[in-house]
Figure (cartoon, rainbow, N blue to C red):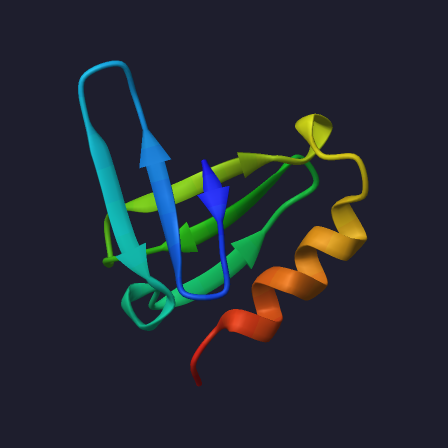
Length: 67
């Protein structure tokens, strides 16, 4: 997953999906994950254990959310 100023890009071996930040409807978190909801039943899930600094990533994600 790549986060840029414009969009989120998720790449797999067979596909690539791009979602603009305006397509993210909600941001939530629990102790282990960040959730970026692109619908009421679908979210991008970022495991905090994979991040060097979860607090910095949280600030970045929240700054890109359109309220």
